[in-house]
Length: 113
Length: 116
Image (cartoon, rainbow over all chains, first blue to last red; front, side, top):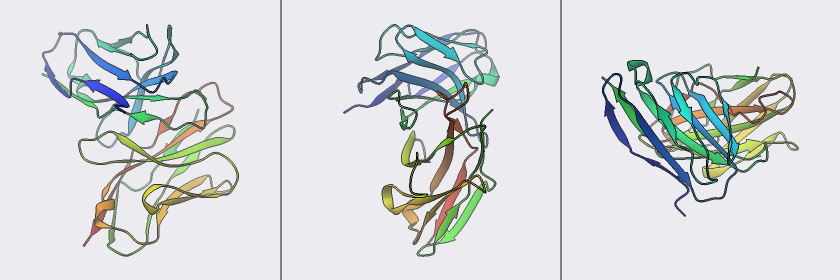
């Protein structure tokens, strides 16, 4: 099983550019999440989705947008990239049960210069 | 609002010795608690969780954790550490009775180094 797949693995952006981080899962999970990981800060939730067509803001949504047109895909869009968005981004998915653990992708390391 | 604290940024332990990685939480209702491990340049991997029932939870790779409601803690333990256990460990919580029950909140992480 592929699990949660993120692309690209690495990317360098110039300030003001935009890009989309791709995330797809093959476990038929309803819930999907985007986190960013900064050194010493743990993981911060950017956006999450409880099913196709439904998204909601997390703790740090500013500067990002998401969409969920299918159960499998949950892309994260960065508009007008800023140095503060330099981070490692993780996509995750889970079943709806609140006791369900999340499954993570391998991450996208983004640098904005 | 739910929150998690991991008071130690770094824990060093000799191989073969017991290890403990500390986690305390704050929720308004009942928590679901999780431990994850992250190896370099990898995503997070699930280790174990507390939902309900026995306060001592056993998970992958010989790890276990004890839920203590009175101390609002969920410390990760292993009786005998291995060098291969060296990694970054995250505690996470869901508050079942809050409006953010769908969200998993993570601590800042603890770097565990097991010395040969």
